[in-house]
Image (cartoon, rainbow, N blue to C red; front, side, top):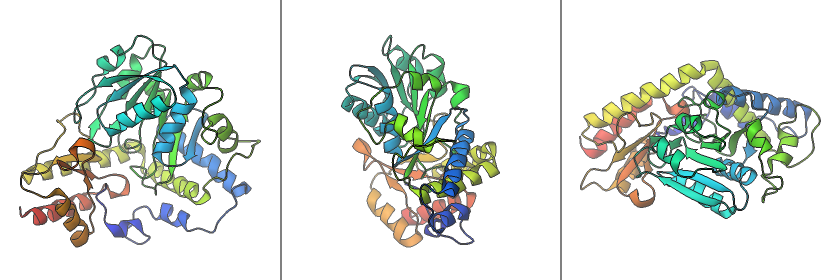
Length: 360
């Protein structure tokens, strides 16, 4: 689902993030080695900086972004709790399913796929929910939802944000927006291999957590005693050492570049991509003002086989773009330009390759 030059995934002069790649192949440390625990603590500190939060309970969950979603829900939602979920794409739907499996009373606040949620509709969906859950950057559609506006009107509810495709790509301000819980993934704008789910939880959310979550593995009370220790620790699980070392390195690259610069780079590449696609006569699905710079949805022209185009881009140019999902599988392409691939050279390569494949 990324504009992906395959060589960028390996070490070498074309890889702007060699530190994260090198960390994956570094000699193994034991998961209880003091040297690794120091890296783990510093990784959590770096996550706080990227999330823009002081939350002590900020940590990498051992699992992909979906594990972050599940960890957030099982620790905050119990049977009978009312959860309002903003649904305008696949991952809002997934939030509903995860909450439902935890016994929640799920209330849907919907907008059509490809359109942003109206924060007023989300806030009006129920008078007193325990949790309001919103996808910040809907990966299935390329729409940005206004999490800050939802959090501003939350009242006594906890706001939970899915930031899998937004963290380190567009502004995410957990403390400034007063978001209570959020999770992400490593393989999107953070620019690290998939396998971890950065998660942050406010003190307010912690005080209202489920005391005994349905999941043992994702029980943040137990995980936090090991991962977020900064002192005495209790063994919970064997941490994925190489992945955490890679995340540590990748976050270091992001912070060295600076969050403002990272956001600006994604924004500029997104602008170039959107304008270039339109210059090829292609229509963008999401209306201006709500488009993500890091994930662009493009309508497939009439008479074009979307899967054949994707295959030709991959085979001839080593570029991968995603298909649509759900009811829009054959109607669009999803083009990711995020993390270390968010570079003008990659945008130019994709546009030239797509023009050749489409004969434009």
